[in-house]
Length: 263
Image (cartoon, rainbow, N blue to C red; front, side):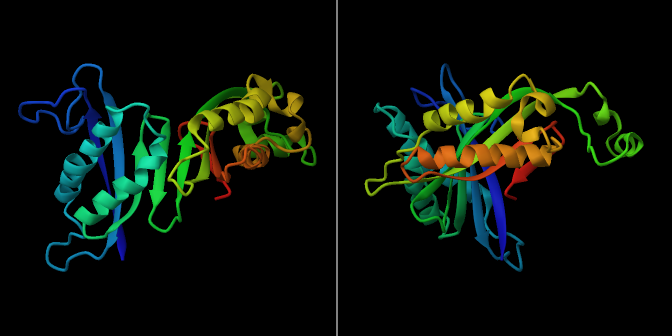
C-alpha cells in the first residue's frame, strides 16, 4: 500500500474563464481580475498497477478537482455569507472519493500561503486547522553545568554572551470538531486571537533567557521553544470550548531548521 499526493492549483473568479489553458502550472482555472487563488492537496492511497506503475492517474485527480470541486466552491463563494472552509471539506472529500474510486485518504486545502484546513478519511467529523505566526526574539544557547569551553565547543557562535536573534515562525495544528449540523464552531479568528495572546505577545521582541520565565533554567533551543509554546497554547485552545484540541506545534528557527512537538 502506498500514498500519492497531487497538488491542484485553481482560481475562483466571478466569471468563467474562456479560452485555452496557457499556464496550468500557476493554476487552472486561471486568475482573472480579483479572484481567489487556492491549492488543494489530494492524497490517494492504493497499490501501484503492476503494468503502468500508477496507483491513480494524476490527470484524473486534476479533472476531478476542476470539474467537481471548483464548481462546488464557486457556488458557495457566490452566495454569502460563506461558511468556514472546514465545513466544506466533507463535501469536497465525497465528490473526489466518488470520482477517484474511493481512494482519497486525505485532503489539505491551502487558502493562503500560511493558512490551511485538512481532513483525513479516518477522522470522525473533525478537521485540522493550521495557521502560521511570527515572532522575533533573541536567545543564547548555554548550559550552566558545562564549562565556558564546553559551551563554546557545543554551541559555537550561538553561545555568544550577548545572544543572537531569529525571526521565528510558529504553526499550531488544531483538531476541530464539526457539530451535528456540520458547523465548525472553532474558527481561524479564534486560533489567531488565542495564539497572539498566549504565545506571540509572550515571546515577541524578548530575550528568551532573560525576559521569559520558562527559559530561566531551560536552554532555549528550538526543541524547547516548541514544547513551551505547545504547553502554553494547549490549555488555552481547550478552554475556548467547542471541542477544539491542540494536536501539535511546529516552530521554525530558520528556513532550514524546525521542530514539531509532539512529533
